[in-house]
Image 1 (cartoon, protein in one colour):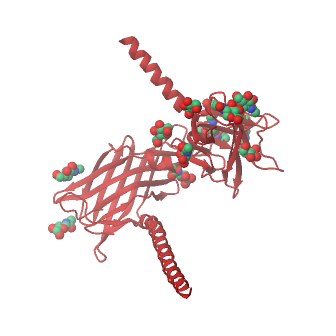
Image 2 (cartoon, protein in one colour; image 1 turned 180 degrees about the vertical axis):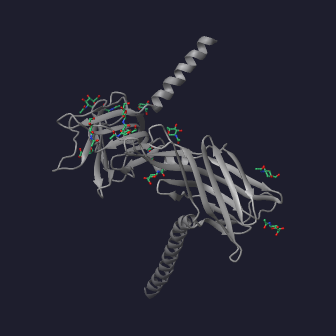
Image 3 (cartoon, helix red, strand yellow; image 1 turned 45 degrees about the vertical axis):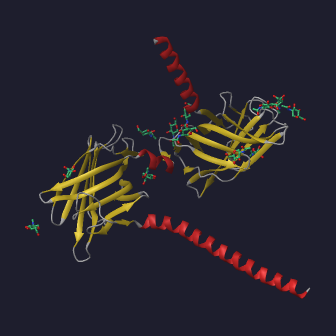
Length: 393
Ligand SMILES: *[C@@H]1O[C@H](CO)[C@@H](O)[C@H](O)[C@H]1NC(C)=O
Ligand SMILES: *[C@@H]1O[C@H](CO)[C@@H](O)[C@H](O)[C@H]1NC(C)=O
Ligand SMILES: *[C@@H]1O[C@H](CO)[C@@H](O)[C@H](O)[C@H]1NC(C)=O
Ligand SMILES: *[C@@H]1O[C@H](CO)[C@@H](O)[C@H](O)[C@H]1NC(C)=O
Ligand SMILES: *[C@@H]1O[C@H](CO)[C@@H](O)[C@H](O)[C@H]1NC(C)=O
Ligand SMILES: *[C@@H]1O[C@H](CO)[C@@H](O)[C@H](O)[C@H]1NC(C)=O
Ligand SMILES: *[C@@H]1O[C@H](CO)[C@@H](O)[C@H](O)[C@H]1NC(C)=O
Ligand SMILES: *[C@@H]1O[C@H](CO)[C@@H](O)[C@H](O)[C@H]1NC(C)=O
Ligand SMILES: *[C@@H]1O[C@H](CO)[C@@H](O)[C@H](O)[C@H]1NC(C)=O
Ligand SMILES: *[C@@H]1O[C@H](CO)[C@@H](O)[C@H](O)[C@H]1NC(C)=O
Ligand SMILES: *[C@@H]1O[C@H](CO)[C@@H](O)[C@H](O)[C@H]1NC(C)=O
Ligand SMILES: *[C@@H]1O[C@H](CO)[C@@H](O)[C@H](O)[C@H]1NC(C)=O
């Protein structure tokens, strides 16, 4: 029994390890200085021809024998792009081309694949040959001198090849032979790692605040050696909340460990609107910071605004600047302050960002409807004409 569960555990661990471990690749310049470090796992789906007339898809992971090929290059003045070329198995390879953009970003500007379709270990019953393809479309980009990090799955397709990238940690244009401590987090991770918490505040005459939102603090601070560092804190959904109900302000305090976020809502009785007008943030900083803690506030805001009696809703991320070195990122928010009937949200007022996102499908839909109409009219006219044609015969 114990033996079987141990085997099961090992199998599960091996399987998980196989799926999750990222391969690690480094490119160095002729002097031996690191210019590019890339870690990722990759799953390929490749469509190929078989000896019968049917096409088939092969799906496999980037195998452990994957290694950097010598043709990889660091950028230089003549050709500033950096190219990682990885070989694996029996004559397969992939390449990633990095370029600088706008002096402040680096991007993967091309992704190429070459497969030896004669390799029956990946391509069973293949009719052989070679498949090469490249795509110039990737959304992988990061600030210079930062690591690009993305745990979420990212799918990229180039004709007959599609890949699923995950556990990505990449830095190109590495300076001074050392990887940066700063990070650029991909948007997929930002929205998925912040968990939504439920908050409410009750007063003597009932509930005055109800909120459902994911909260994240983004702090930048000087280290003891004066370099500027940043830290992103996700507020867990089980954070302790409290607050007060006033006639002109409603306050929500969210406390998680040594971190304290206070949100102040105000109302404007002449316009019948309420809004977030103040934020106070207090948080301890890591030991390498020059200061022990950060304590900032902003009482000049006009965010999350909605009509009294209704709720404000936004799926898109909202970044609210508290000070030069602190911002509060709010995800997937629905909030209502002051008048709340029946302990639940009133009618929804959607944020502008979401409305803009809604606009795209509406415009596309309208354009399609227009197209259908034009085709229909053209068809009817065409039919009338050809009828006329037959009659003259
Ligand atoms: C192979 O996979 C792609 C993408 O998933 C799909 O579009 C295609 O139809 C598949 N081809 C075959 C032969 O199954
Ligand atoms: C392609 O795979 C076949 C079969 O495994 C092998 O004989 C051949 O050498 C490979 N081609 C290259 C270029 O590696
Ligand atoms: C990358 O790979 C593709 C496909 O094999 C190839 O066409 C392209 O020339 C390669 N690019 C570089 C820069 O090596
Ligand atoms: C390969 O072809 C053989 C013979 O046609 C067939 O029996 C077998 O199922 C095929 N294998 C795959 C993976 O399609
Ligand atoms: C498919 O056909 C090619 C060329 O005709 C041949 O080399 C290969 O061995 C065949 N593969 C299978 C699985 O029959
Ligand atoms: C990522 O893809 C793998 C393999 O398809 C899958 O098992 C896993 O659930 C995916 N993860 C997420 C977060 O979608
Ligand atoms: C990639 O992995 C190696 C080995 O685990 C590590 O030393 C390196 O810092 C990683 N690179 C990035 C960009 O995170
Ligand atoms: C580069 O690295 C060296 C040794 O690690 C260090 O002494 C130097 O201060 C670094 N220079 C910069 C600009 O970070
Ligand atoms: C406020 O009252 C409602 C209804 O009784 C209750 O569901 C909610 O948990 C209360 N909130 C707090 C913070 O006590
Ligand atoms: C945190 O703030 C810095 C500086 O404003 C910014 O570059 C970075 O993208 C922010 N990160 C997140 C996760 O919001
Ligand atoms: C708040 O409003 C209520 C009802 O309008 C009123 O009775 C109360 O005195 C007000 N409290 C304050 C502090 O203004
Ligand atoms: C400054 O200190 C931070 C935190 O200890 C460290 O990550 C960073 O590399 C240091 N920078 C320099 C230039 O020494």
